[in-house]
Amino acid sequence: MPVPVLLFASYADAFGGRQVLAPATAPCRVDEVVAALRTLPGGDRLPARPLVAVNHNWAVPETLVQEHDEVALIPPVAGG
Image (cartoon, rainbow, N blue to C red):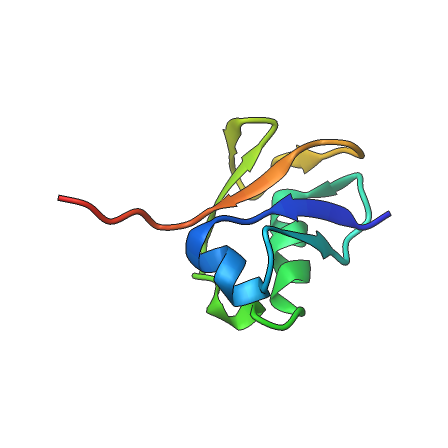
């Protein structure tokens, strides 16, 4: 089953929506989800190591993603 990924701000713009289905099969690792996202239109706009949250917690590339987990890409934030 593809992994649904929530997108915000510039990532939503890049992928053309607030959510995308990453062509990865859970269970998998965060880095596998990111690699799958790179294969989609707009995926080339992701930085080398985007910030990812799984179930509202910051995730590292090795974090395991299970079916029904909430995965979100967190865009860079600018401010002053």
